[in-house]
Length: 378
Image 1 (cartoon, rainbow, N blue to C red):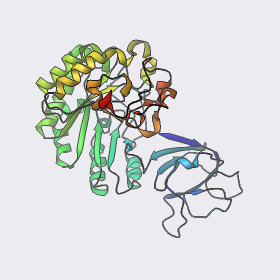
Image 2 (cartoon, helix red, strand yellow; image 1 turned 180 degrees about the horizontal axis):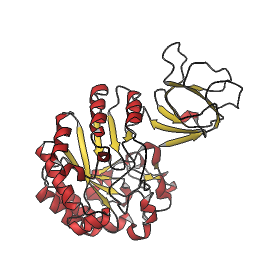
Image 3 (tube, rainbow, N blue to C red; image 1 turned 135 degrees about the vertical axis):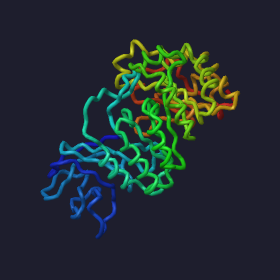
Image 4 (cartoon, helix red, strand yellow; image 1 turned 60 degrees about the vertical axis):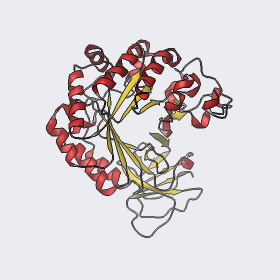
C-alpha cells in the first residue's frame, strides 16, 4: 500500500476514514478532510490532513504532508499517532484488496510477505473498511497471509461484499489447504457469490517438491481442496510462481494440470516479487527470468493450445519469446509498480507489466527498449 507521512497533532489512536476535499454540513464523522494551502480548517471531521505547517487547533490533524496530490476524492486511508498515512483503498485503481489476516500456515520460500505469528483479528476493521468502498468498485481481492485461517469470518467478509458491493468481483488468494474440509467448501458455496474466483498456488507436479517449497506437507490437502471446490462448482484459478526451484518442471506441471484439473478457469504463471521472505532466500530462488523462457514457453503453449485460459503475470514484454507475449498481463498493483530507466523510450511501455519496486535490485539483465508499435511486429 502507499504511505504518506507528516507531523501529527491530537491523534491518540488509529483513525480510518474516507478522503474528501469537499466541505459538507452532514455525515462528517467517517471523513478525513484534505486542506490544501490553507490554515482554515473545518470542524467535525475525523481528522484533517494538510500540506501547511503546524497550527494550534484542537482536532486530530497531520501537518506538512507534501504528497497530498496522491489522494483522490473517495480514497480510504488510515492514519496513526506517529503521523503515518496508509492508503488502503484507491478509488481509481482496479487492484484494491483487503488483508483477511497476515498469519499463514505455509512458509513459502518465495513469499513476498514477512513472517507474522500473532495478530489481532482484522474482521471488524475490514468490515468498516469495506463499508467505505465506493459502491461501483469492480474488483476486490481477499488476501493474506492465508485468509481461511480466520475460519467462518471469511464468509462474513464475502457476504458483506455481496450485499453492499454487488458490482464487485472477488479474487480470493488461498493455499487451498482448508478446502480439503468439504463442509467448509459447502459453506462457501452456499453464499452463492456470482463472481468469486479462488486462486490457489501449485508449485510442482511432485508432492515432495511442492511441500519443500511451501514448508509444509500439504500437497495432497491442496489437491483435495481443488477437487472439493470443483465439486461445488466454484470458479478456480491456479498460480505458479516461477523461480530457481520451480522453473525446470514447468512443462511437466502444465501437463499435470491439464490431465488432473481440466475444470480450472484460469492458470497464471507468475514472475516472483523479491521482497519479504523471498529477499531472505534470494540466493536459493533467484534466476534471471530470461533464462527460464524455454520452459515457460512450452508450459504456456501446452495449456493454451488445449483451450485453457492462461496468463503470464508480472513479466516484462522485452524478455518474453514472441510466441507468448500476448499472454502477458499488466498485473502489478499500482502502488508498487515501477519502470526502469531502460523503459523510458520503449513504445511497449503502456502495455507492459513493468516491475515491482523490489526489482530495482533484482531484475533481468536482458531488459531493453522495444521500438515497435505492437507486439505483433516483434
